[in-house]
Image (cartoon, rainbow, N blue to C red):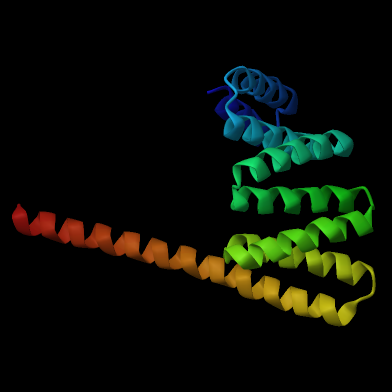
Length: 178
């Protein structure tokens, strides 16, 4: 519950309240030795500190989250943490470290085959390589990013269309039954 309240405050940009509730959730999850919950709490705190531009604290929490998700072998979460760590290193202008984490995220995203993670990883690779003047590779990464991003949007559109069709069929059947 405290984690959800923290997320609510984060969305409202009330960062101090979000931090209070995220930390409260972490304490409870830690006392229960609930590793997945602890990892998620650290991820949320990493996100919060990124919003606050407190990047060193963000890295601490993202790395704790990463370590726990590696123990649990939750690959999608590992990929997400690698991406966030790469982004924070980029904001700290530690480009080499950012590239290392971004490349690890890209390899894992390819292994998983999740378009969301691939889009994010390709976008980060594009940004890093463009900044370093590797324009040919940056262009390849940008094209892959667009391809994956469009794939995600297309999948969302298909789901919405199916949902609307089911609703329409239901309403038609209800009209016939009435």
